[in-house]
Figure 1 (tube, rainbow, N blue to C red):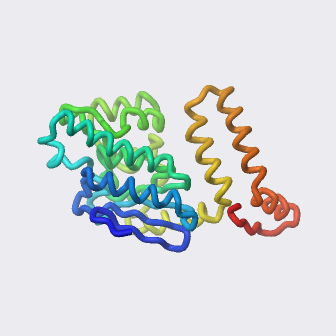
Figure 2: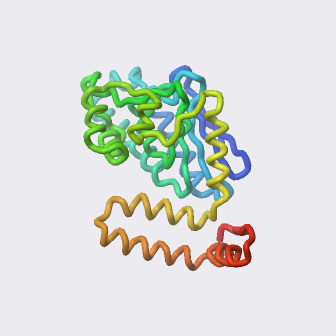
Figure 3: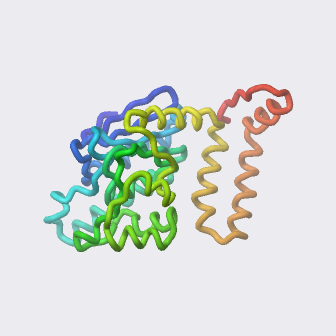
Length: 259
């Protein structure tokens, strides 16, 4: 898959997407279009079970949207830009396999929004997070006003959104924005270790599990638990369910076929 703004690699069942616009990996319309394209392809690639997204270099995961592209856009053109970015973010969030953001350096604005679409966020000690759009006279346009409160709560989200300040990795972990903070030199090793553990799980159940969590959380509790029951029955009909239960009874490691 040749891309101009991304690097793509596969290690067994793990795919790694690297934002490649150093030094700050600013997000322009080309990046968003290529992200959408690679996610479409990964959705159809059953050989990939986990996806890691990271940024090239040591300065930034992604320091935000490319202001040099945005500054001269008309309102109509900016609306199209927003639609392209939202399409990429939504596809990333809805990808039918687990995703890990490996965050090194700045994750601001659109970069923070991209990280929030992932299932897990691992940050190096030098990572910094923020939604600084208010300082430019605008507000987030890639889901920041909606995903951030859902992740860290309304009060903390308003603090970051209204003030436009950055927080460090330790604070982000305290707020619940980050799952784990690791040494900068160990970031990709930690991400790969988590990816390998996730990849060892049965793919059918993992796909259904992600869909159930992501969609159920938006429902009332009665609808959500009914949705969960129906989703559970889908996994119960899988070959891996039978293998998993037999392996437990036989006191051996399961050999999942992802069917």
